[in-house]
Length: 270
Image 1 (spheres, rainbow, N blue to C red):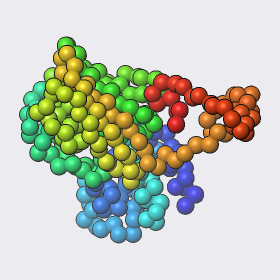
Image 2: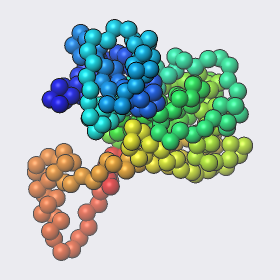
Image 3: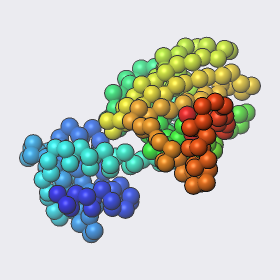
């Protein structure tokens, strides 16, 4: 199994070279990765001949086949697909025609974002944004619509960074879909609303707090991401200067006084 460790550390482009649909790969226990110059087919012991034929039909240049145990397969599957698509890539697939209610209301909500087989571009775009936010350890996603443009930003390490600028005409579709996911009233645009989305990304449980706020040209949405598996850090993991770390340790031992921690949203105060 030593070779599997190398696969996990390959260049990102190699992981993305020949991706099968996530739901297909997970259901049938088969995964294609590029190792050096060879296409490697990784499979569980439950692989069926009909599945192998379907894979070969989509990727005929498979040079190596390798069986892996179930635990290793799940780890490789998550590592590969967890970083396989970005919101920018999804933007290229958005067409000019989209129906608000068909897209925002009738599409089922996936149990696992990566397992969604839905081809609706808006849903795939939103799923990709949430996936990328988790991968980038973003604390917030800000979606704002102005008079002639739309802006999507993520707060990473306390700093808001622009990620996408979707076409302005997509604003009602994106906002309505998020409100449906958070079980908010899509018809109410005049008052603020708060909701919550519980989702899974490659097996990771993530809570998303959703806040909407009316604005001059549409609604603004802020999504606060809480990764349940992120864990808690101790002082030695916070990257403090040794002198500051030592001073804080001494102050904590004092029987009285107060330590005030300040900083912008998402900077790590908690």
